[in-house]
Length: 254
Image 1 (cartoon, rainbow, N blue to C red):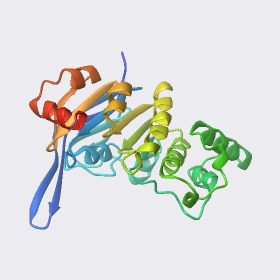
Image 2: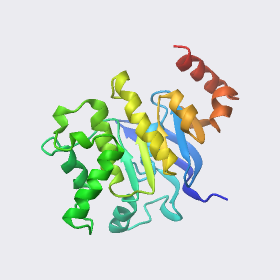
Image 3: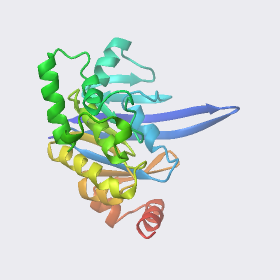
Image 4: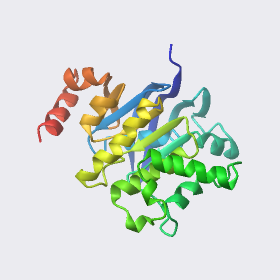
């Protein structure tokens, strides 16, 4: 039986915006097993990105319990000391919509920056960077700067940098949404390779084909709620919730 790697129980996230409260996530409970690819789909503003940022406490929830790899990191308040939380976050890589690369560093230096505090010597670091760039298909771009790369190449550098820390979990927040259509495929191919290697991945995506092909489980969100969860076949081919049906009709038939 697979062990639960990520457990979110009764998660609420409330924002105070001027004089009104906005509840971005409402009583969400999801459990993600080790090695699973978990796709989160739904309308813009549904709370998808907020939910995925809760997993590593980049977004602190208002209520609920977060358990990551057996450790309770939040139970109606942050339960870890800052240093322990930093250690825990090293096990959780995160890829954002925008690449957050350092413009003054080469591709290789951007990836190596993630190894700044590792115990590897210089030769070992260089060897690891070379392997990671080979993994994401950018060995020939090691000495280029971000300004010399396409959007898809920048995102692949960001993935290599996140992988440098050997995380147990990778979170992807709309990793292809800022890319031109012709660049999306390259990034998705790298993610498929990670999936084959058994990496636990949580992917907020609008790429329905990717979610259907690669994910083990898919959740559909609307208005801060989980409306439906199941295998890709259950959610995409036989949705039970009317909101899910309407969403899929809209995005698949455009």
